[in-house]
Length: 498
Image (cartoon, rainbow, N blue to C red):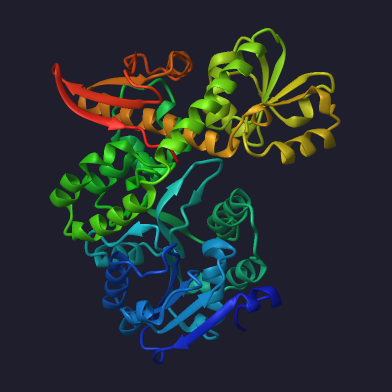
């Protein structure tokens, strides 16, 4: 029996086109989305290489207004193309693609892949052959300990024993459209490999995280490299996995300056790729140029909004310094920053992943579950942009609404964007600090806000980044980093707001 789409999922399919008959023993379902409704050249190259590896390719795009001329660029590599509504992220694209291959169980291998990576940087045949010899039922390029063990979902390979099982079919039959991305990650990405491991299947990653951590020799605090991975995953170690582990990919988002997960150490990506891969860097440059042109507008407005929100954020934190028994709800990036600046006022830290956090942050003994909040305690919500949802959760747990403090409600501009910029800023610290320790560079931080500098200093202190020096930037609404080595200026990295 084939994978079955629900009625609402069927209605999302705008068009399908069978381009040839089944030809190979391997199937690739390629999930695509482009805001400009084009098939970029790096995607054309990836499809060409998969075709050379003898994959039947089902191309599923959620760029609903894509022109036939764009699809024509790749038709010679495809078994089928599908255009659908942009709902359900990659998982619904993969499910939709599978549903149009009723005899999917006859394939020896199915690859679930998306367009979030530049791939392949190297000839991937060696990788496929190596993983085949090890007899894995399911494998990916990288795994993660973030929240719980899982294989990262931008590249999943499923082999015959698993793909012929009922448990594999059940996973996709039960997959449905969810609108909350965090819920999708929790249920589907983090549920995929653990589900199969639970049922006795053999799952792994081409580059296991443990090998990366063993390779690192950095002067971090105990457990802090693992803590960084929990937050950053392989995006932090992009260069290491390419140079030392022959990773056949690099993630798009860490190269896009306006992206939340931009890694500022990628200023050297051309040099790394030229030394360690055969990839045509022009494919990346063409994509990045398009992104830069798209994001040049409204930079000044984004900066103004961030600093306006920052001013209010700091005032709220100063007011809370008079509150001696706060419960902090949420220990993401903003929560970490709040904790670093109010740690003497916070008696408990509540997070849905408190058990994992407790294991990771041995120096913090305040993690607990929501059931441990007492009804009269003051709860400070550190998850900006999700205030209403969290208020409902807290009220359902018998916390009085008058005792819930939501900083986001005070901010004059979008609190979620402010949280994203705080997240990106702290990402930048982690990435550049790792590089500075590894290369023995000096790292300096400049911002035009003395108050932001104080927040940052406290964050750095809590996270053991003692060598970073903090200074005032000369111009208003300005943030940047400087790297130097042996008293010589190396790089200035401007912070770009999202």
